[in-house]
Length: 275
Image 1 (cartoon, rainbow, N blue to C red):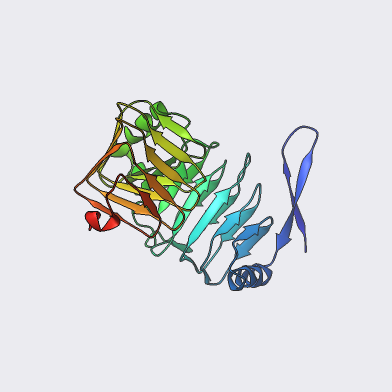
Image 2 (cartoon, helix red, strand yellow):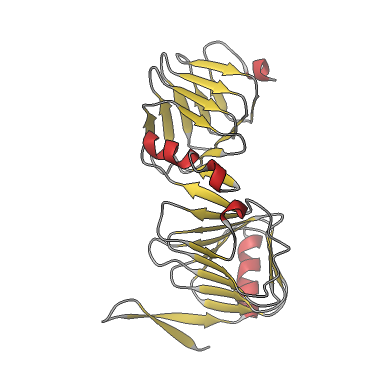
């Protein structure tokens, strides 16, 4: 197979290998059969239909081009790298269908819909762009079709993220590190706080976290309410297995839904109290 070259500085080039679509389809199928995600570090062009059932990450400087046919995503498709991200291009007459999945652009990635691309497989908030990590681009989709993902370092960052709620189809806050909320925050209706990257978010004394949207707490993550702190839930809180919602000394009021098979550690209340 051939190679393409991309200049990254005046003195260095990185060689990106070419991969045939048959090789790519076989590699993704093998990863899916093993229950693993697939990381693409090559340039691939698709000219026939393909369905992705687990995460596929288009890594640094690599590219996935859909020249014809439909790329159907039933889990998640990432353009993700630390600096120079990968690129996904949907060409004239080709289609990206994420109705049953999601596409995420972050770490310097690009998602490009060329003129004439079939946009019928794209609905609001199925394509997410990270607003914090790297310079990311989605070409031709308007902001009101995009989900905006923020990775905050402070409560002020979270407030600034949710202030964007009217500009995007959906706003999601995804902490990568532990955070202490030192000022009250309201999660707007339809927006998300996702604890999925091994973070603990602490609601400190005198602070209220009001949820009108969705809070998700995955394994290894924790939302804790300190004494005289408060969680006021009018939306949905999902505590997945090995995730923790902890408020032994804080206050929780609930007119929404709290569910999941994770750990809800309370001051005497049980999960049945939230049914």
